[in-house]
Image (cartoon, rainbow, N blue to C red; front, side, top):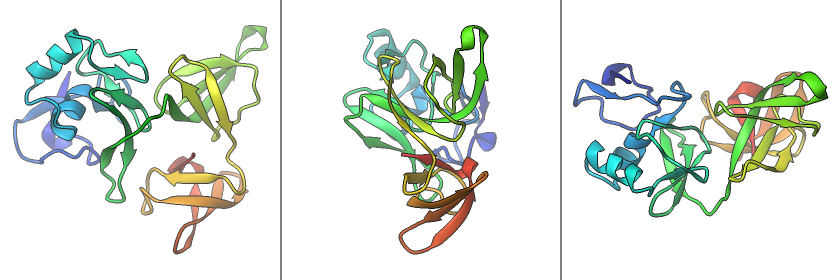
Length: 205
């Protein structure tokens, strides 16, 4: 699956000129970076898609501890890709995706939905397209650290005094601390100013 370079996400740090078509992530395609672009164009660990495909076949690449099976698999925000080292996908203040080295053995995910299933189990839906069942009290807007074994390591409620990272909007790429939560609006103390943002613009960390 491909898309034209001109229609690719502005968050993707690739040249606007070049081949007409580029790879499109086969999962969470609107917010994900395809493995081939991550490895070849951002981390510079391969020169061609053929080399990335060879790395996939040799079992050299993992996303959140799971072997990559296709070079077009998507890497979502705060997912961890393992190649020569571990790298976490984040966002710069320019709004561009970026990888930073990490030692994390979990992914930080925002809860974007929940559903009560038969047996009173609750299904939690995460921003990267994954989900899990739980009996824990987790609200939409909270964050969870999900280990590479699939188990929840930590729940971070979206509430006063919690640290947040801004994932979209004018203040994208900045960290802050919650001063107040009122419905879906969150007052955040940043380093140099206070901003009021919709919950959709931030993730608790």
